[in-house]
Length: 192
Ligand SMILES: C[S@@+](CC[C@H](N)C(=O)[O-])C[C@H]1O[C@@H](n2cnc3c(N)ncnc32)[C@H](O)[C@@H]1O
Image (cartoon, rainbow, N blue to C red; front, side, top):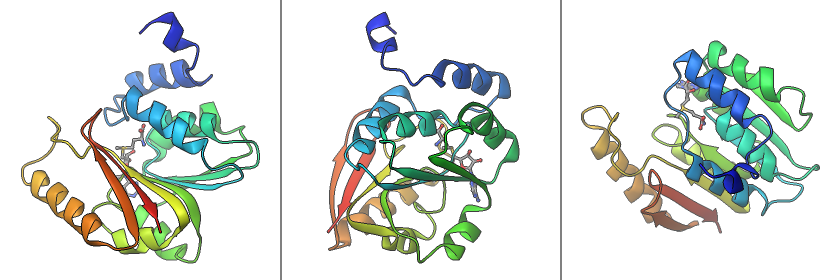
């Protein structure tokens, strides 16, 4: 990575990256995806943001970097050990609330909440409870998923799940979507 690119890294990025590598967490979003997450976050001033699947907080750091001071983010993960890394490095930012919960339970308990931006980076909101999570999007809200191009760590049969998810998204008449063949395969949809 060049120094030029380094200038735009979130402040906590290098420390979280090191802690992530030490922890053995291997599911973090790549830097291209994170950069796009930040750029898209900047389109929602005063926005309400949801991240399903915090991991160690790498993507969270980038989303927070794109958000303005009036925006708020809820980030959910069921793994306390990884979530702790995110909390250690980002927990003092008053805009973010970390929720240690099963994604399914959390979604079921928060169905009435509405968001301007949802990064669905775990099972729920992607392969599970898709309709429920898409219903949480405000009109004009962004729904973002990655890892939609074949990945080396996909278990057998996951390709079929990914194909079905893309079909489900394409069949909806309340989403305008673009499927990018870039980074790990990002889909961006806007609720209409
Ligand atoms: C792809 S990783 C998230 C990576 C993170 N967004 C990033 O870019 O660094 C998926 C996360 O989902 C979490 N997870 C898996 N099953 C879950 C569940 N049932 N409820 C909540 N989180 C879950 C895992 O602990 C993992 O941190």
